[in-house]
Length: 165
Image 1 (cartoon, rainbow, N blue to C red):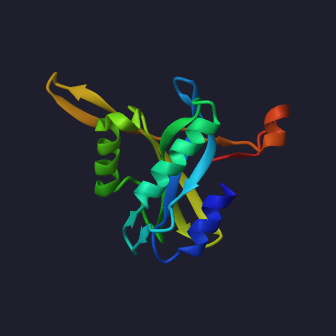
Image 2: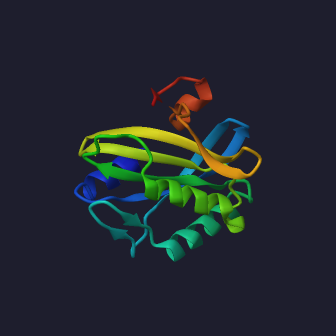
Image 3: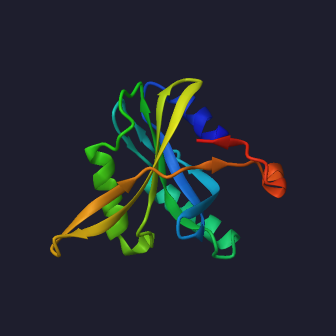
């Protein structure tokens, strides 16, 4: 999380973000093992962010191999500087739908974490999304706010909770 906050502070007046890698310990418990940053050619604008996709995909592939093919792409995070709302934007929802519909992503239930705020005062707002069928015909994006528990590597050995977000 510290890397996310550092990046958010650095790009404060513009959006930034990254990718989460990890695995699902249970159907509703994701374990994040790595965060891959935006990349050297990412586009950071006041109200939009586009990662350096080719660079990120190469980093995802490297992490996947290093993990023994256990850690996979879990989802993304990005900032909403000075945001009033912690809700997903239309663009965020479109991105999530694209992730779910992209076979190469292999992720039917992506995480998206919004970081809203300003330097040294960022608040995390996680979303877990998936499609559900409505009226037998339509797919709608089901959005729910999961609980995120953050542990240090030392604390995870003892079970000590470091932060509940």
